[in-house]
Length: 252
Image (cartoon, rainbow, N blue to C red):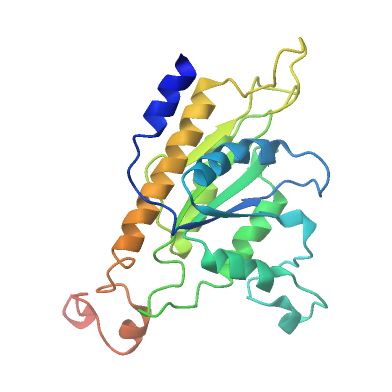
């Protein structure tokens, strides 16, 4: 009976999201084909996105040779190879970006930090309106681990995304850490053999679901509006001399 109620409630959405594109980037330290707890939690928003017709791409960043740096292509700055330009094409296409990271020593993973640095390498680029290239896109994050720090990590990831130009909707993060200290991680089989750790956690399921819908709603509004209005935030117009009501420093 509950499944039928759930199906009816899910079917009440009448917003078309089928022209939206989403990208999830898993910043686990584990290369494929190793299992990833972060990938399992990313599976919640991925399932919701797919159910609602959003086209979805997935990247496990550690599988790719991505050198450190803050430029779009690090082969132009001394490195022999750089897989980032191909990943950037996916990011550029995506209306929605969800970053997934584990917690290590209370911090986001080193892979996640590298992602943020490489995103920052595009912070000087502009769109057709002369705004920063990330304007009109929306972002969120999920966090996994078995030590404290979900909100701390979310704070840093979401700040970084909004700083380069992403729009962050309400409640744009979700996570699961279980009991403090060493122990089982999200998606591990329960010791009693009855299901998987974290899958039935109402707080995590709710936050991951709300985050995904808020991302879709925000992306829908931005796309329908043609992105953010460009008055007052166009880099190109600022460089051309437009000051958008900024006080003249000579008269302050």
